[in-house]
Image (cartoon, rainbow, N blue to C red):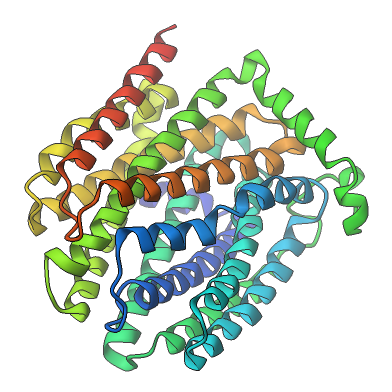
Length: 420
């Protein structure tokens, strides 16, 4: 199998193996933590959840990163990325433990959201750092392959973490606090795994390192402006188009995720535990689509080019999403979850490759942090749009049709750019 062969090639790089271990443990912990939050906010029997409440939670957790993200990028281009993984995961382990105590204490929702916000804020540094560090552990020839397998493996790890969280909550202990503590343990393991990498191994170059916070933040506006100019230069125009396309596809995925949450909570079943199991099955099916994208994308990107592959993914989603979503039935919805997992992850792999191969190493941290900010803003915007369009049971024909139109527009625009 080609993906197994490619993975064997990459695993020959010792530092790639070590970075991959950090990614798997970090994102596995993210999956555990996020499922615990979803179970607490959406599937607690005592809570009457609405699409507006889900959108509000996403806004509280994600919108502040529009401010944090650019600063994270500057720091990733100034601090040793290995140290970011070490201290970031240690900090998340402590704060996740604090979140568990807040759940047990039945504190007001706003205090719970502040705690969750702190955990997820550090996540911006870790995820952007993992992408920025990848070219440091593989050669240029295998960068596309690494971009196919490494982020996809991380997504699968997050899904596996989510599955573990479902199992712990439904089988071992009916307590969201216990699940959050499991996430804290995995964050601690990720911190320990990062110690296998040398502090300077992942960059940036020594002359760019500024170990003190005040020095690193000095000139942030100048550094960000330089990164934007670097990205906007004509040789990197395809990277700009890819980022915009991926942002809109993220918007579509976010809107459909909110609809899926409401369907699992109120439409497909009336029992909260059954709804949680069904949500876990849907997310697992979507993860299978992510894995399929890792298998298909290297082959498709070589033959079509990464940009045309992005256009093809969006076009496929524009046709299949309404065909499978409009029946509002469990079977077609699970198939749609697979299709959207494949097309979204396929487009993301191609986008990551275009950006990494176009951007100089000294700018990667800043640009991937901006990339992350675009993702968050798109996701919150999608949740807000879904809140306006979704009825209480989650069945919304206008939402499904609107998402299909966005996918179609994205496909046409990207195809036209690649043709030019």
